[in-house]
Image (tube, rainbow, N blue to C red):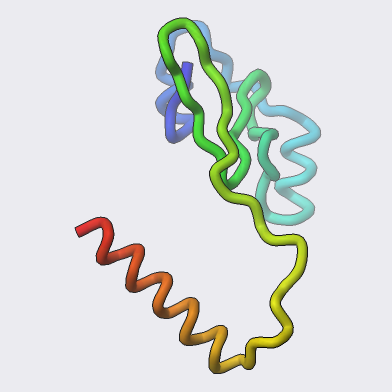
Amino acid sequence: MFASEAKALLAVPGVSARLDAAALAQYLSVGYVCAPNAIFEGMRKLEPGTALIAEGAQVRKHRYYRLPDSIDGARSEAQWVEAVRAGIERSVRDRW
């Protein structure tokens, strides 16, 4: 099963709402549960930048984005601000 929120999975008969003790400890420590762990036992989250692809009986994860290993130190702060702004504008424009 797959859902964008745990509450959708918890509505499925037989799915337990039992908390994962390690995930709960992590949540109480840092305020969130790191993927692939989830707050409920038996559930997992997709890691950031990952898509779940289902094709017939095959299900696989595809990593479509990974943070770069280093930051380009040659750009100034103003250049970074402009690059991020342009990227956000391009992303929004592409989805209209």
